[in-house]
Length: 389
Image (cartoon, rainbow, N blue to C red):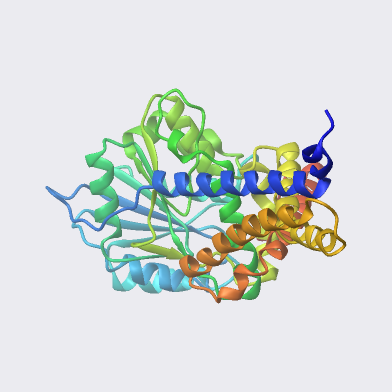
């Protein structure tokens, strides 16, 4: 059908309209996800403190273990025990943990035996720790790079018991100090928020399971009922695998925001960030095909924020009909996209200009994702001196 509107319906205008629709959807999605993530509130035990065992698997964590154990030593609750499982470390991890154990009788250091065939190291260390905490009512699996506030364990257990949960996973506050961390991790967390539906995590009968193993509180009876880490012994993302077993067994799981009560610094720069993410991105994103698709969509949308307004501006300058209106739409959409990432810099406490270069963050993330796919297809995933099929 001919007419003035059809003549003005240029490629620039179509792309700008599609870009605006995409940004509006992403903004609404981000707001919805944020509202679905409940924050853990500081609280004490309302009754008699239950028996809680915090299990810290540690392999070559000399740079982190002291801070982790110092923070755990401040936790309240008479029934608290801390089990550090040294997973064949090649650095001073065991010596540092042993020094803490000498000063605090609640801390116990275990040496994990040689890794059995078919096991992933972290799964095995968690299993060793859980078997040493048979008297506990709750097991809290915590990474060695996590720092807990004094009320963390009491608050987590109180929330879990109040909501009748069998598993409560806590998303920590991220400490980002290097250029690599500040560039890549916020974009990665945004991407996960866009593609995951947090509202479906607690819904019974839904397959969605989104958790973080950095701090995961599990009811002892639920852990035993599904076979614990032995049942997911070969899983790279053991947290998701274990939570999936517990949810499919008909038990209740939840993911809370724990930014008030725990923090983590996962990586120290490119040297640790790249292999750390490449190790498990394929599992996190649901397979090789979905990883490639997610990486490509993320990087394309990120650069659209720059390229579509630029294309519209050039066409508008040349007097192409309809493109000046397209430019206005594209600028509005891109301003919202940049605004969202600028807001993220405040949340992550990093310089604002990282929000202005976010397309580079998605590009780096996409390259890491492709490398993760390459590693998975090669059949060999290496992490901390170990190689897994």
